[in-house]
Length: 206
Image (cartoon, rainbow, N blue to C red; front, side, top):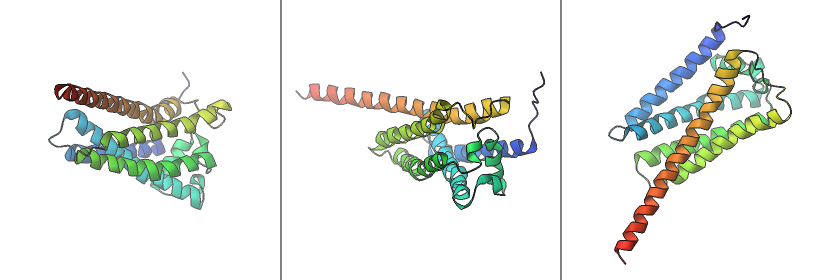
């Protein structure tokens, strides 16, 4: 039982920043979703948080990695990525695969999240098309972040601590697998429902 369970100051600040972004995202999403179903309000809350993470946290990571690297950078967000880098060192030294994926994530996923928020609020016909594309992009990003690393034996991953393994690697990355998966299922159910309604309508007009 020699593992140290106490959170360090850097870990505490990092988790606090993530919690603050979550609170802002939820507040924005719930406000935008007023008058809608509980499911739609929480979908909007997730999308607001998702876009904040892409633009604020991952956007800063991309900038720091292009002008230098996270390990030599200073500031609150740099400290967050240094803390995460204790679990995955690729984020400290501008790993080209990770940076390439993050550029795609910030630009494409971030913009898609904003378009999807707009499509839900304005009830646009293309809502589920955008939702499916965004979810597939999110899942692809998670796959390409970790599977190449696992294929070579995970030399950059540090799983010696419960915090690094279960919070940083599993929980935070798992959110971008679980929730896009649920949103894909929502789109599938909704599109199937629409197809059934159109089929029934066509039968009535025969």
